[in-house]
Image 1 (cartoon, rainbow, N blue to C red):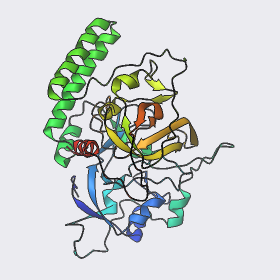
Image 2: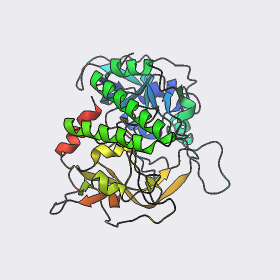
Image 3: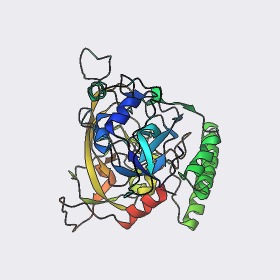
Image 4: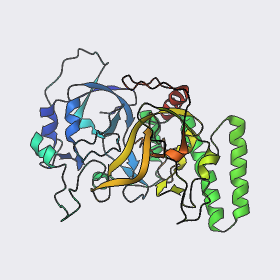
Amino acid sequence: MSLRVGDWVEVRSKEEILRTLDTDGRLEKLPFMPQMFQYCGRRFRVYKRAHKTCDTINFAGGRKLSSGIHLENLRCDGDAFGGCQAACLIFWKEAWLKPVDSPSSNEAISPRTTMANGKGCTEIDVLTATHAKSQPFSGGPRYSCQATELLEATTPLSWWDARQYVEDYASGNANTKRLLVGLVYAAVFNIYRFMRRLRLGRLSVVVSWLYDKVQQIYGGVPFPRYRGSIPAGQPAPTVKLDLQPGELIRVRSYEEILKTLDTDNKNRGLYFDAEMVPYCGHTFRIRSRVTTFVNEKTGLINRLRGPAVILEKVWCNSRYSNCRMQCPRAVYPWWREIWLERVPGEVIDQRRPAPATQAEISAHAASDT
C-alpha cells in the first residue's frame, strides 16, 4: 500500500487490528493506543505520510518510521495517560488501514488481514500496555505511549539522506516549492551558525539582515533564529490573562516576544521555537490550556510551571527545524500568555466550534503544500 496525502482510508475493525499486534499491543514496536479503538470502522483522509518524524526525547534529529501514516485531526486525548494534554498527532500503521474510494464508498469490505509478524493480543492487553513494565518506587505511574516509545519504533535518519525528500514529494507531503524554500533556509541558517561559532558576529548579522530584506520583498517570514536578551537565570516577565478555550487572541509581534526571552530563547523554562515565528501577528482561538503532560523521556506525568495554552490549528510545520526538515508530525507548540493578547470586543460562544480565521486557513493550507 502506498497511501498519499488526501487519500481516503477506513480504519480496520478491532478484531483485525488486534490480530496484527504482539502481546504488548504493538506492531513493529509502535503501540496501538486504547483511544484509537473508537475510530475502528470509520473513514478519514490521510493528512501526511509519517515515513519520518522528529526525536522529541533526545532531540537528536530525524527518525525513520516504516509504513507510518497520520490521519486528519486524529490526536491523542490523553485519557489513558494520566490526562496528558499534549494532544499528539496519532501514528497509524498501514496494516491498520484500508484504502477506500471516498468517505461514502460502498465498496465491499474484505475480512482478510495480514498478521504482520504480530502474535495477536486482546483489548485488555492494549490497555495494560499503557503502563510501562518498569515502574518507579515513587512518582508514578510510568506511562508507555507512542511518544515515549518513538525511539524503539523508529531508526535514525540523517538529514542529508535525500531519499526522505523524494518521498516527501512523491507522497504529497511537500511540493517542489516548499522543498526548495526549505533548502534555501537551511543553507542560510548553516552559514549564520557557522559564522557565530567562529565568533564572526558582525558577518552573521549581515547574513540575517539580508535574509530579512529578501523576505520583506516577497512577504515572507523574518529570520526565525534570533535570540532573546534576558541573561540566563534572571527573572523573566510574566502576564496572567487566564485565557480559556474558545477565546480569540492575537499572537504578539516577533520583536515583542523576543523581549520576554532569555538568551536560551526561553520564558520561565518554556522554549520559543523558530516554528512559532510564522504565527506572530496573526489571530487564532485558544484550543486548550496545558498544565499536565507525559514526559516523553521518563514516561512520568509532569506539571507545567506556569500557565500555557495551545492555539487552534497552530502546529509545527517543520520549515526551520534543524536536521528534521519537513517532519509531518505537526506538534502543537505551547504558548506563554505573555506572548499573546486578547482581541477586544470578542463574544465567546464555547458551545459551538469557532470559525477559522483567514490566518488559520492560510497557516493550515501552507502546512499542506
